[in-house]
Length: 118
Image (cartoon, rainbow, N blue to C red):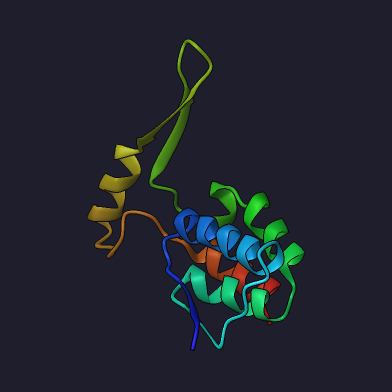
């Protein structure tokens, strides 16, 4: 019995999904059990249904606005043009003062998941 397991973790899970696609399509591996957690569960279902292009489109088109409605991060460019990601301390402080449980609210991600995945 052979199992394919993909973990969660956003981009880490997406990387594992790419590896799984390679193993299935290019190497011809077949699996008896497909299991995923968090982002892995979204990927596993699409791999099982052979809807890889749909999931690739979703994972390559998301940005912070499509995930966070209250973003805890700021993206800046340094003097060489490279992106620098930092914590938006003001937003974190406001979330703390409002007694929120998290530093960022990801309601937009929930909306995206409901819209894309049936």
